[in-house]
Image (cartoon, rainbow, N blue to C red):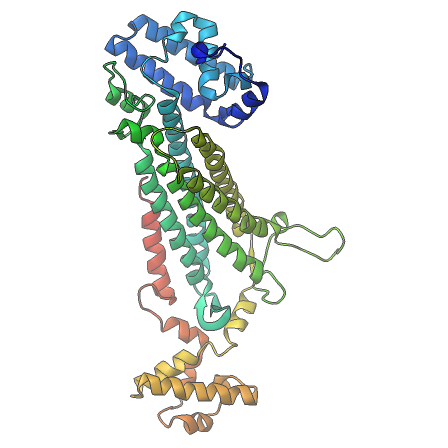
Amino acid sequence: MKLWGGRFTKETDRLVEDFHSSISFDARLYRQDIRGSQAHARMLGKVGVLTPEEAEQIIAALEEILQDIEAGRVEFSPAAEDIHMNIETLLIQRLGDLGRKLHTARSRNDQVALDTRLYLKEEIKEIVGLLRKLQALLLDLAEKHRETIMPGYTHLQRAQPVTLAHHLLAYFFMFQRDVERLKDCYRRTDVMPLGSGALAGTTFPLDREMVARELGFAAISMNSMDAVSDRDFAIEFCAAASLIMMHLSRFCEELILWSSAEFGFVEMDDAYSTGSSIMPQKKNPDVAELIRGKTGRVYGDLMALLTVMKGLPLAYNKDMQEDKERLFDAVDTVKACLTVFTPMLATMRVKEEIMAQAARGGFTNATDLADYLVRRGVPFRRAHEIVGQAVLYCLEKGVSLEELTLEEFRRFAPEIDSDVYRHLAVTECVRARRVPGGPAPEAVLEAIAYGRKLLAEEF
């Protein structure tokens, strides 16, 4: 007999039982479910729904169930549908009618909302920790490569010289926004829904604040219908996870390009590369490619949750059972990708001379020539035109700007003097960009120091 089967005259069809059951995936919530049940029992003992002795017996039995689960001595039953009813069934088997008292003043609707929020709070903290490890690595690499010149790109065309440090710091600040989004999501997840019942609260005099304190929540929900039907926090997490994956995917795309023979900027470590089953010479950046591919998976989790929730009337609907697989998948995927990406990046070999050589090509110093002319009194739009004509001349001759003679320069602009060659050196092009947030080594050091302050902040 189902725990809810009093008004039914037939057993659930086996097909429905299998289709209906969620224990295959929500079993991972067993710790949160038991913690929540223990807090609920303790509160029921305090307000007089249970005697203090009954509450302690239930709490102790739940602790034994937890130990048995973690020791592998429990086999969950699909017939009990979900983690909540599996644990309650185990409790009744051990305590009889006393176990049947635990569910007083609560519903699976507020129970599952509680468990999911407890779970996600833990996972957000763990993911922030993984992001912090990656950010710390990026700062270390930036410090090491603040003099490593490379081309910066727009439209995947060489644009202006920067440093590898500056490029890496761009990702540091992307991931910093991810951390801030997760912290913000945590704040909205940190709301205790237990006590909302199925949708209309309860007639029992619950002490919801006591339960919130015991379980470490910052606040209690203020509307019972919203509390049991809200999955905004899960959707918001999946949106934040999608942005993390988008940033990882962009980074991986660049590493894939940079490790190709066409760029040759980096070489991925053998431990984070794979070979070909037919071509003996191949060394493939499969880890980076797989992270790039898994990004679409997390996007799918977000879209699935949005689609599930978009047409649901208040309050709880069974459709919402679909939230957990998508949430769990997003959590697992982000954690797996961050866990493997950080050591992959740490072991990557940078080919500094090839990067510097690339920065010296493609007229990446053209803007600096225009700036030079502006400092000589030439209006910028006129300077832009002059340099464009000089670049066209160089393309026709097959030379670079710094290979032009002073006489050739002065054909385009008489304001140009012999000091122009110093300004066209790519190292000087980088050093001249001392504006805060720029690629000059001293500006990069300031950004690194600021980054280290951010990493020192408490969650």
